[in-house]
Length: 304
Image (cartoon, rainbow, N blue to C red; front, side):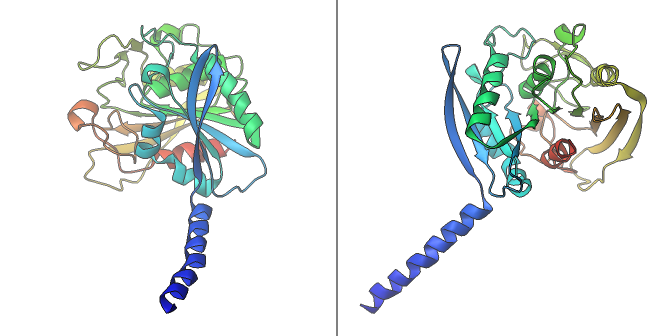
């Protein structure tokens, strides 16, 4: 009988611990939406800390060959969302990729239409601040962020691509209806998306299209956002002297609320700074450990 009461007394404690864990960590909801007679999937991370009545939304797009679930585990944005109080939406691309304008044959779906419809559904399902909707992503997801700024500039307040630039095929007519602030994080030793522009995929992956250089992409946004061409430059602390990289922040003064920033990762690879080494260094290069891309992306978005 005493053993029974001991067990019974533990139940409120277990319930309390469960409630405490729920208050510290948010929850992931896997959902579906039908767009153009196609069932599209996505995951929404609802933050534990809801610090405002209407929540900002960060769309985070996986790279080519990735998935929403993979992106959650490998990049770690949910921890930032739980602390700061914003929704994170992780859409799944069909055939594990996005139609980002590079004319890759297997990605021909209307992904712009998908995201436009998904924004409206998220606004119906959650208390969303529709003036604070943002896009970020790595590689194919970064290229797609540029496509969203081009085609849905009225919906996205700012973008923060990582390991990406404007596809060459879009460069001449890259004229968003509205200026979109930009934070770009690129590594100078990215073997798949060359910092100086050229063929995407390097020697490992063929037929991935062409990209413009990081410098040309920044120059395009300086023109679009009415910025001064000279940047204020500052070195980020070299917190890990053994990671083979250093990082420099370039901030351009632009028309009000149209800021352009570049974090140039000297020695950085095709990776998410502060994230996991998801593939071998020979294939994707090194992960920079001097800063967290998650923190930098959110710090940029939160200024708007």
